[in-house]
Length: 80
Image 1 (cartoon, rainbow, N blue to C red):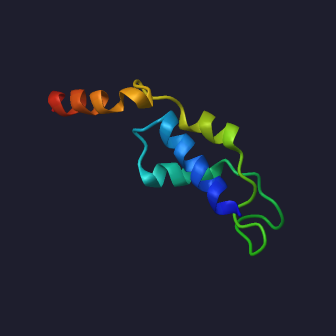
Image 2 (cartoon, rainbow, N blue to C red):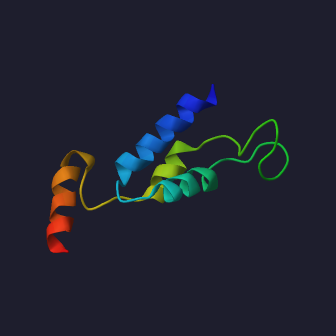
Image 3 (cartoon, rainbow, N blue to C red):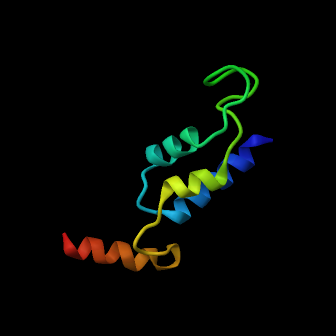
């Protein structure tokens, strides 16, 4: 049951800052969890309870909102 929640969290992080790489999104997700059970990743709780608010704060914001992302990428390509 955690899969849809984690997928939605990744999508929200990416919508907050589309410039992030997949590894950065994963690092934000792992670092923003609330650890449950034994310290670190464990058999019963994985990395812990997701904290979407904390993850979105860690993601920061980009200079272009997601709806303007194609134009943002076009400008970056033109500047290179």
